[in-house]
Length: 628
Picture 1 (cartoon, rainbow, N blue to C red):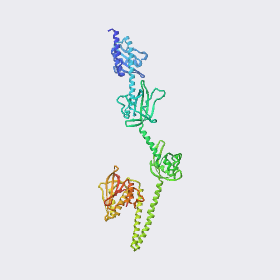
Picture 2 (cartoon, helix red, strand yellow):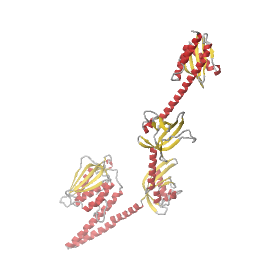
Picture 3 (cartoon, rainbow, N blue to C red):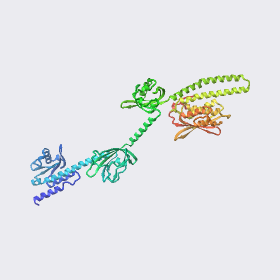
């Protein structure tokens, strides 16, 4: 074959090796191998020009440093300017190195041992080198685009909020890509990308539903969309902050949709608004102040305005907190205590209203930390009426304990003297009636004092009481006091515990006393039993007192069952009311039923564990020794 024809054939076959590969490295490797094979060269490399010099894209052999001829070519390449291409050098006798430019990409280095590449062939390589440069540039751009796309997809998938890429074609906006959170929130975007519709959203201001697509090529400037919206999700309607970002494309309008879920935030805002409305309308004063005797009001509700008889909230502006106290020193002491303890409950203080009236208030509060320092969150309840009622009860209690008792003692003593000095049986019977009435009044006076002590101990208790031990104690006391009566305890061997204090013993003693004293049988019998039951889904202990007496009068039972007395329906004493109030304060219930014969009364209290029994009085099952 003629030399020229051989050259053309070689160049043609080299051209066939350029391009058609997936990556830049594969493209360079295939082309370099074709150059070396068809030009009968042994070593070579394709290098990419960078700011730091030339970087190898493909070399044969793979380790250029191990080949003297290729290393010499690389050294010359490092020193060569762009205008010096092509270049030819002979590092050693018989070995030739050729350097060619790959326009806008880099350079091609070819090493041939034992011969040269003729001038005509070197000249004919120029269009092939340009083709190789173009193929490498294209693959380089593809690689950069691929890397950029991979980074974008990684970021796209890593975003914790629903995000989708959409296009608008023929007036319809469709999803072409979405992240996992988008599909989890709105459902599968369809197995075939590009066919799924954008979630329909509802504008929070107008209430209109739309998909928020709009043309990009308009004169309106920035077409970014940000709005609060309601979208239908797989879990139902949700509130979102919607961001739509337009991306100008060659063929269609493209958008990035980002949905920030603000459902919980909107719910919390709604709850906060409801809470603020609730606080504003509470019948108690809610306010925030800074610490110290001269603290400032930071917030007040309408309840405080009403309690302190102010015209409006403006009354508290620029006013020291101590000004609402009858004694400003009380504010200083209260502030010091709250700062020291962090929280206080039900502190009774005297206040002066805007009208100049003095009232009693019960204040609870906590200290909270803010960027500007600690503040007091306070609640004030007007207890003036309660304090006046307590005062009245104190006076009545004193009258019952002293004045009335002293008067009854005088009446009782005079009645005894009359009874001793009278011989007429009829007159003596009248005197005995006086003595019985005096005895009843004395008993009523004692029970009234006992009732007052019930409420002095507050509501409920945290002391565990061994019910079985308490019943045994009550039974022994009444058998010792009334030998003719039988008080039997029928309780399980294992201990049952309830939260109760001395008030439970007071209630049981009252019921057993009624069953024994007001019994018309020769031998009064009272049975005390316990069992575990369920009340409102929770374990409870039922204490049952059964007697063989005449029963409780109907009007007495009705008053207790209804929880109130009327002129036509009232009890004759305080005994059952004492039991009723004791159980109410301890969180229990009382039920009265007829028995055959007698009465069955059940006391129901929540059951607790016995881990707090160490607080109780040993052997009594009650934390406080009440006596009788």
